[in-house]
Image 1 (tube, rainbow, N blue to C red):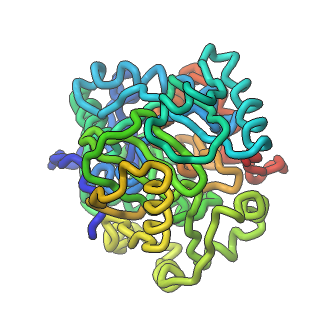
Image 2 (tube, rainbow, N blue to C red):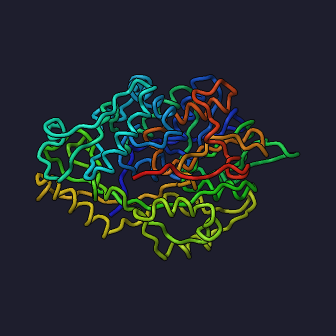
Image 3 (tube, rainbow, N blue to C red):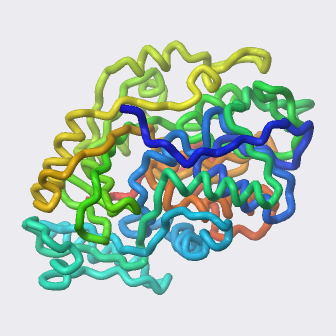
Amino acid sequence: MPGPAPTPFKSDLALPKSTDVVVIGGGIIGVSTALELAERGLSVLLCEKGQIAGEQSSRNWGWVRISRRDPREIPLMARALQIWDGLDARIGGNTGYSRSGILFTADTDRKEEWLGNWAQHLTPFGLDARMVQGTEMDTLMPGHQMNVQSALYTPADGRAEPQWAAPAIAEGARARGAKIMTNCAVRSLDVQGGKLSGVVTERGRVACSAVVVAGGAWSRLFCGNAGIQLPQLKVLNTVMRSAPVQGPEAAIWANGFALRKRADGGYTVAAGTENIVDLVPDSLRLGLQFLPAFLAEWRSLRFRLSGRWREEAAQARRWTPDQVTDFETCRVLDPAPSQKTLRSGWAAARKAFPVLNGVEVVQSWAGMIDVTPDAIPVISEVLDLPGLFVSTGYSGHGFGIGPAAGQLTADLVTGNAPVVDPHEFRLSRFTDGSKIRPFEGI
């Protein structure tokens, strides 16, 4: 069964000879960055090797959440919530966004205490996040049959449609003058005399003074060819969607499953915490850097040796601009979903909400999440090559934070005062002796 189909996007045809900024990658980070840059009057070319939102930006859960985020991401996500509220009007499109609230359930005293303590992180931002129980909790989760004692409820959280959002933002960027080309891979940077002077695409060279690498799961491979070390691995997450059914409006996370209402009346359902880590050559290269993250998340990770080892071992790690790249031979990364994960997530969701029994599973898919050792993104200029910026490694949190991440990335490119302090997201944190650890969850 193929992955989800994003809203069709018609590519621009003519490759410009020069532009101010080239954005590499047509996911929600890339298109949001292009929108921000175009609104500031810069000429922008966005190059996507496949289709807009072809990979994880159309395959995620569709959650727009600040709840349970790493505190280092909260200021940027608070800005993202503000942007989402007016985004459809701003771009003249439909992302499917609504503030429907999200609930994280607690079935033990320890989880309830942790969630209650976490909610205090939102106090400085004037956002309501509170523990609910009893009648209020049951009203927010109508028909549930879970044995839970409470839930963290954040009304400001919401949802959007992953298959709609990035294409709609891309259209908004194009309406402001950005050129957006699909099926046009950027092969390499063009560096002359130690300075960034452009990029080489499969269709030719483009001169520019700045480049943003927003290639998601492909960013490490691209950066490596330029001699830039970016510690990033891939994690596979499996998702399904159901036929329409009457159920809760708020998105819900609980033991064994997560779900959210879709615009079509069905539900997007996942197993909640279960993710697959395919062992690949980079697993060995980066093992020590990722060890703290693996130890912190071992309960939710399933390691396996699969065909991904052979595929990635065969990838060229260095190439010249005249060579055909893996970006061209694999236009869309479309991994097979885990059938075991599908069965367990759907069974847990149906047990929790009997209304789902007998409802058809319409589609299932998987996506590759780009993760960093501390599970927060890299949004940073590359100090060794001025003019090169990286915006990647969103570790499964990128869809909701995407519009604000695009603003921060554009701030760095233009030299504007950053919307939030970018220090935590600097690339150099992996080499300057900083302690690299993911936020401790529950």
